[in-house]
Image (tube, rainbow, N blue to C red; front, side):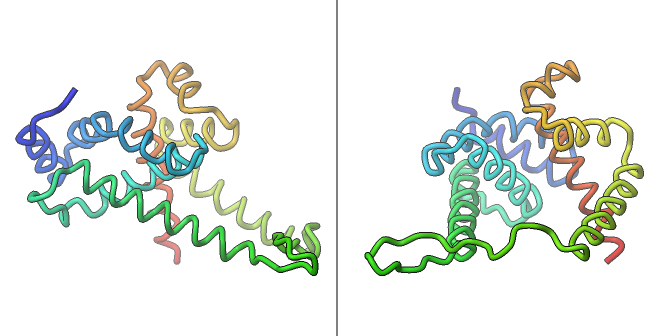
Amino acid sequence: MEVKQDIIQYHIEHALAGAQKSFRFLLNTYWDELYHFQLKRAGDPYEAEEITIQAFAKAFEKLEQYDTSFQFNTWLLTISKHIQIDLARKKKSDCMELTVSNGIKRCCELENEDPSPEDLLIAQQDHNQLQHHLRKLPCHYRQILWQRYFKEYSYKELARANDESLSAVKVKVFRAKRILADSIKELH
């Protein structure tokens, strides 16, 4: 179903004014197209979903920079493509290749994967800080993040558990992560 450009522009303007309904409309309208585009590029459903979420997050953050002379979906696809390229570069740099004597390339291995006592202490402090910030969130956001990241629910499971549509759950997770990130940034 193709949506007319004037309807898209209407929702962009209202989203710029902070209307959550317009954010949801834009997310619902373009989610499948963006996700399937990334699924073809990445080949991994989890990675495609994460890139899609990041693309919407970045687009919504920079919505005032959208140039109306371009189609909105083209702008979204470009953002997602850049995110995917950045992630691919990061993976490549994280995994330096070494040439072995027989010419086969392989990824270098970590020297020691066991955490040191200092690493364990830092992880515990980070966990405690995260718990503190989670407690400051409104109950419905705290619950959705808990289910998504600690119980590892899929978006479909979240939708069923919370009796909400899939797109509403995706927006709620996005908003909860954004509020949590803003809360953490305030300390630093």
